[in-house]
Length: 111
Image (cartoon, rainbow, N blue to C red; front, side, top):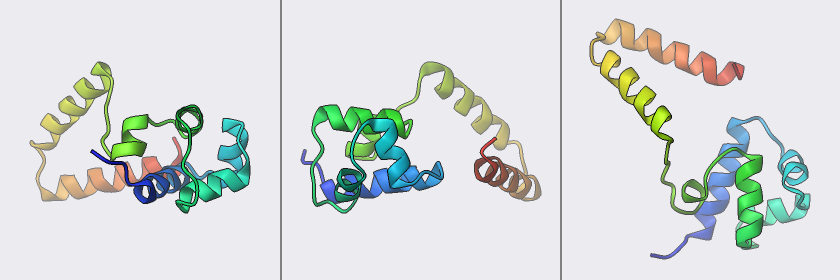
């Protein structure tokens, strides 16, 4: 298995944008330089394991997501996701659209 550092940079940028953070915000939270974050996102630099872990903490994600694109959840999160999924199976198209709008609102509003 090889790591695609271009994808790594894209995942960092994507997660950063979801959280409405600038590169400067991430750099400050991770104790790294703004230029280094920019270089990683543009695949000009490869972060050390230590730097990668600092970035993960700064953008509240896991190394497996940044490195491989896979998401792992705690048991409690997984159980909650399964409950929600089971409830969604009971919804018709009209209710699913309403749920989708609500979820989008929650994500956009940083609730």
